[in-house]
Length: 332
Image (cartoon, rainbow, N blue to C red):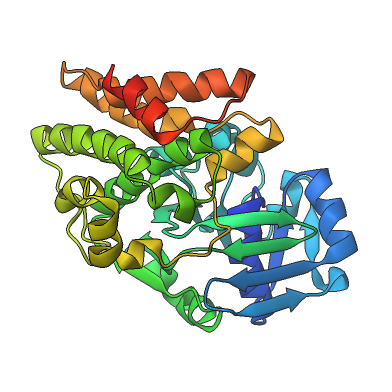
């Protein structure tokens, strides 16, 4: 059972690292910079519950060319959404027929993009519900709760035990699209957190920032209702109630939504990491998907469109926004 993680950055190194630490044969494929980092430090995997796992440098098999995926039985695609088409073309040239390919990426359309090009393979759509912080030196930290969500298919049967032993059980769904939209509704906080330039818990503790997220979510929920999509129930609270909860005064929010603040105090979003590293973000595949949905319906999504514009500006020149400043910008 040969497992390959294709595009092994933060999410890929964490998920693949948990599998490797529990005894599964995993090959990581990614950038030379990460290959050098793991060759020196190996993998250190921690989570918000206090778990700590290690994979020694000599035990990390990290390659930098697509050819290393040639014998893969299971491929976990974790590249950034903008690189999905390129990854699909690269994999199409090397994968054996019948290999199982899973998109564990943000956004809505990545699985479809892979399936269009990988016609001889079984392509499934998955979703990673938790946050992973890349702390450098081979250290990857899961800051929020969750396992792994995935489209139901019999082809996953040989791999269920491996993910279970790794502490990342596969939760299978007959219809993955409502799950993807549910995750995207939560990911609408990514640009808010990135623009705030503070840890998630600190951001969510401030009502003004929560009102920014509530505005983006409420706008998206209206569009989804128009399209006839009901987001999956992935939290204890129905997602349609989230904007109202987020708008509560701080003292009520902390009392009624304490679980939302029960996250690692250092956890941040991948979009913050991208801005910090000077990389292009996934904004077009998160809030940009909402803008795209609105256009398909002949409607507008001004809040999400403004967040897209602000992140594009931040990709050129960073600034930290206060909650009131950002809220005024979105309301304007």
